Length: 160
Image (cartoon, rainbow, N blue to C red; front, side, top):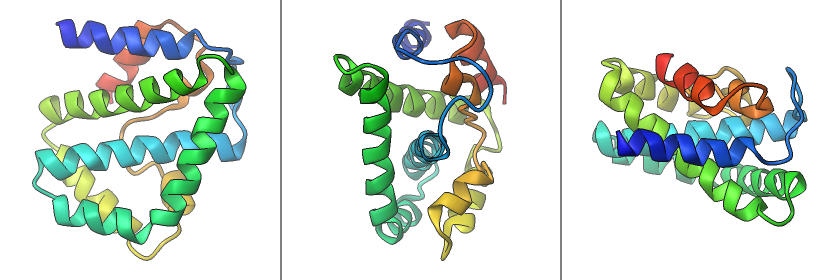
């Protein structure tokens, strides 16, 4: 229960930053950065939970440049939204994604199967193409534009 509340508090911090509301409110590069972070955090959790460390290491090595560029774009997105708390919000968002993936791994019997599919989808393809397909059920649309309450966003991620 404390963990769920902490996750909601982190999400609330993210949602209270300077974010515009409405569908498609982020640039394509910003949306790709948000989705890439969600994919990477999901696969990181899968590496540990599903004993897929070699697959995760292969993913990171083969997409290293893309992951680094996306991470820089993600940090810039958060700094644009809030120059004073951007770095903290960036870290909170990535932590929140990892926690959401971890919670999903506890409740979704298909968690490892989905991760295996995502690992396979990423082989030999540009990462931007992979994340557009949304291969993992951590849909950041609710978070991306932040139009509703933190608990609704948290519930939306947990229910997928």
